[in-house]
Each structure stands twice: as structure tokens, then as C-alpha cells.
Length: 116
Length: 118
Image (cartoon, rainbow over all chains, first blue to last red; front, top):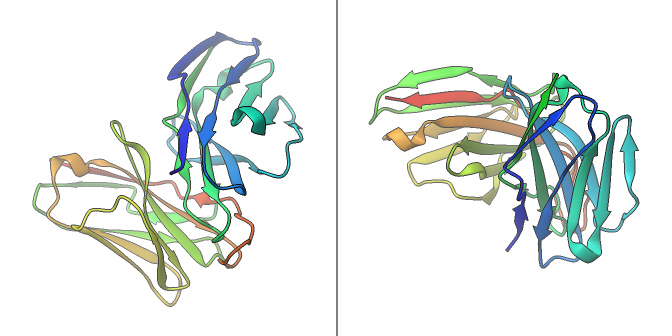
């Protein structure tokens, strides 16, 4: 069975600090996709990134970066120079590939508070 | 704006009642997913439809049902409501076909319907 663990329930940082959100996953599939979503206080879920299990290259998008390590089943998310607007709940999610477009299995989320 | 619309935004009803939540996917997306977000259970997948057919089922109660219509919009029906059904219900859509080995495209989520059962 698939499982996503986000061990950090809540993190609080001061603006401009770097912060890393951890995500550990379990799956028996050899091919899968990993995702990160952001849920700001307004409540919507905003897609941030998708990564397939064959691509272990780290990705950077502005202040956001993702570190995918298959050996440790982790897909961590780092925000550099955090800003107040980054305050949100962040979800890591997993889906299997072999049937295509299968549902997401979400972690419990990490609530990030960035204090000015 | 994700392009996925959900109505209503808020719904307040009483125990034992029945409600219908509506979702319109992004233009061209054939897959529609329903998720429930509650404080104790987190974000849980309920059910998926692809081009009008049920594709996958998650932790959906027997009191809940869904369908996808020919115009691809979907409805989630919740009946005999209980206090514990109070939650945020999200609809999501994704593009591409389903089938073995095909890429899992990202799902785009609607703004959600907040259901309060009193």
C-alpha cells in the first residue's frame, strides 16, 4: 500500500530564513509520481511540482527547490529566504503510474508559518 | 485560478439531510476526482471518474455517490448526513488518457465546497 509521511506537523520560521519540509513515502511500485501542493489560508490547493520516479535530478524554481532521493524514499522541499506569503499548509502526495492518472495519496501536511 | 469550478462554496445543512456538490473540470480534462479534507482524516480520495465511467474508488461511504455527465461535469451526492461528514470537499481534474504506463499528470483542484452538518 502507498503511504506518505510528513513528520513535521508545524514549522515556524522568521522571514528570510531557509526552511525544509520533509516527505517520506512508501510504495511497492517501481514507477510512481510525487507531487507537492500548497494550501494557503484561503483554502485552495495549488500545484507546485510533479516528479516521476525515474528522474532523480533536483529541481529549482525561484526560491523553491526539491530534493528527490530514491535511496531514502524522500522528496524534500526547501524554501529559500522565506516570505510571509509562504505561510500555508504544504502537502506531499504520491500516485502510482501503471494504470495512469490514478488518485493521489496525500501526507498529513506541514503547516508553515513565516513570521515577519 | 485552476480552471476547475465547484458549487456551492459553502453549504450548511442538518443531520439526516441530502446534498449535492457540483464540479466542472478544466476544459478538455476527462478525469474528475473527489477528495474529502477533514481535520482528523486529512485529505482523502473518495472517487474518480474518467469520461463518464467510474475509474477508481477510495474511502467513500455507501451513503455517498457520484456521477460524471456527458458534458464531463460531476456531482457528488451525500445522503443521510452525519456530523462527521462536515469537511471541505475538493474536486480535481487532470488531462490525458488513462491506461498502463501513461504519465500521471498533475491534478488541478477546485476551490472546494465547505460542508457543515449541524
